Image 1: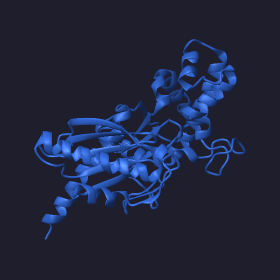
Image 2 (image 1 turned 30 degrees about the vertical axis):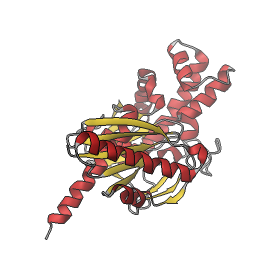
Image 3 (image 1 turned 60 degrees about the vertical axis):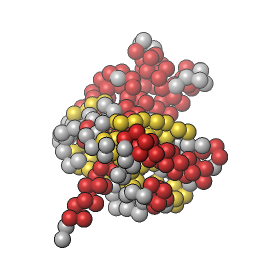
Image 4 (image 1 turned 180 degrees about the vertical axis):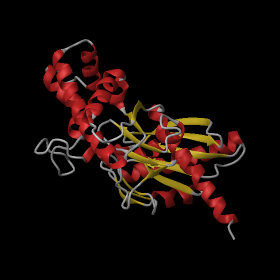
Length: 313
């Protein structure tokens, strides 16, 4: 059965699948990255995992994968196929596409994890059918994927969509990026966890605990939550003013709060728009499988491009 390898590399773990031409997940697996052993060990883990997946395809599906798609965090030079930098994984300038292509003997597509997840959400998830969408996962940080007609815009230098570093509170909290007052310092799951731990006096409290306290009517939790929602709305309105998306997809850990997040967020965005067209604001549909599914889409896209090139006179 014809299939591709889809691999989503996170900070501590990897998710993978063998994906059929119709998008069916024919096999799924997980492995640790081994980052505690250093960046070279992580690269080795990725290559070994990919080899295992290739062997599984030969053994169980009757043939090796026709291509592979890989999503990685950090700064990614998609055109050159280089994983340029990742603070979590510790690597710099890893020619991951070429390393995987040499190991697997097939074409490989390398993408940024958030843009890859956005590709899946846009094509087969919450943004399906939307010609313009913005995907914003709210996790440890905040990033974004700008969807245009079935593809995701990387930008001239691979930095498009970094909405987490829009300054929403000038003169506010310092951000590791070097600016102060960045959106992700106020509206990420990590920021809400930090604010609620301080407000509740419980150093172990996190954003999920804050959401539960909001649902139960705790006034301190409501205050912390609303501050995050207001900051998020400020950043999103800046983004929709520039991009004019038809659909705004919110994912990541904070979105798991459901309407505890979406009801006040929709209201906050609505209050802020003037001439702008209000997009549909929806939760992400694919959860933590988005990156893997997007990697599969990248692999199939690569085969389509390769086949088209081969038949062009």
